[in-house]
Length: 103
Image (tube, rainbow, N blue to C red; front, side, top):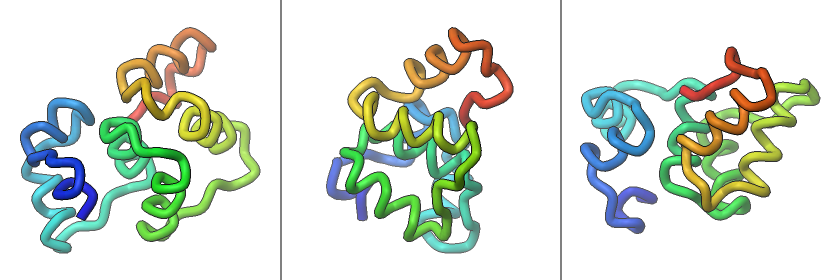
């Protein structure tokens, strides 16, 4: 629904999220569930407003836990939603959090 609403194709989402377009198609048709990092990458790629991002994250069956990693992701969702995945990953690298990059 969000891809349709934002006018984003599987190919475009692949380009902005780095998730394989076949995997995206499987998410869309319901034959595969995305991981939490894949959902976060989609949120970043679509540059979803925080309220919409949180709703998608919850709808996918995830919640932000009280871990440093999840709080870093939540910070990105809430404060850098207009920046996209590449900037999110650059911010994580700048903080020395290379292992936390998405997806």
